[in-house]
Length: 228
Length: 294
Image (tube, rainbow over all chains, first blue to last red; front, side, top):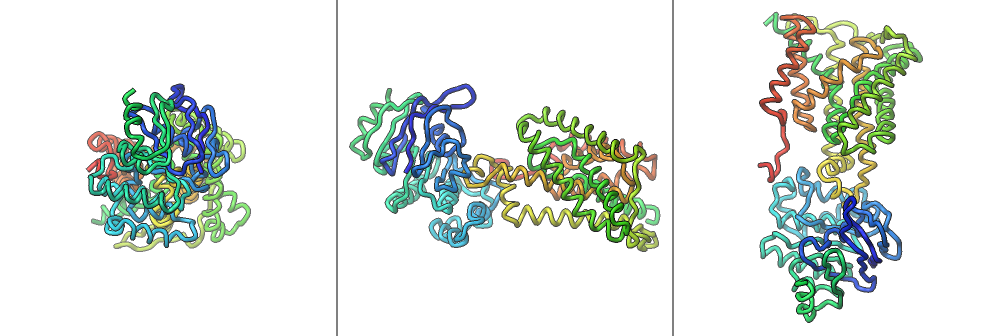
């Protein structure tokens, strides 16, 4: 579904990623690495928030390297950014309506999300800025799912969230992946990431330090690569 | 009471005119953060649209209602042209935007001077605005009542559009977090353009109202631009309710000061008060509250 070929990307004159590739064969890919390794930059380049200076991002057979993020969303990519981002001055419901507007089954998708995440139904008229971190993360995932994506890009979805909700979010991600959705996942919780992934990539200083097939068996070599 | 009523009513009408001038800025400045010094010239463009419409349709009873949407469209397209040609390259450079739009304002003033007589042109008010209504013994000119009704209608339409329409949601989302809006499927560049169109179009509507009170000339935008910015800042940037209260407060204060002193001194006193208010409360009347700010 997603194939990244040899991309360089960064901010201004600072290059962060150096020739990073992700094979198109795996449906669930985990990107691992320490803070500052380039994980978020890779996801931002994938969704189009920054333009690679070299290389190609291919999605569903199409070269999307030069498409604006909203065009990539139209084609089936969805991005849940780091930090439980929501439109804080919009209510929970307005956050969902924003992405449902103009979609044929928009109302049904909103109803489906409110059923999947009951906390969002409870606080539907509350401004998103007043929700807890976990609720805002659920809202961010719900917004992404309303677009009926083929690929879900998740940047540390369980970071800073209380353990009970972490388990809920992890179950949601595993359920979606089992349902056939492709996932590109950045996650500090290595055990969960490897368990969910078909393929993993360890980034160090913006380069692929190690990659391989997912599964908890890879834990030892991943920890060793991350200790570099 | 008899002495207080006329300045109160006249001040409310002046406040409504200031509100109309400032309303578009709550979008272009308040929501998008663009310091567009040519906004005053979009007001001027609206006023000239009223004049030109009257030349084509001599009946002012018809021409003024027709001029309102026309002025909205003409000023809106001027704003759109400005956004596409200049402002879109300067979104994170407020000083550059300010200087460039001052230049555009001067060009538009000169263009108006080339097309219309330097001393300005009159706009005839429709017959249905002749006369007064009696308010506790004071004969309140209908022209002033019209300005207030027009301002109220524009405020209600803008507030409803922002609050309830899907496009309003897109504007609010883009303003709050542009990257998140893009990755939620919002085409933020289209949002920028349409927001600028509507904000500038509202200046055109203000121009029609202004033309009925003071006619039109190439310099008329200059007298509105600074008061309009002050009203938006004092109201709390991007807050329509705050802009309404600030505009009415400034209008009423100016009229009372004018009764007690002189017209020019009244303007000075009113804006000294706004500056003092902003020293005490720099965020303006209303602020956005979120969990992070609470």
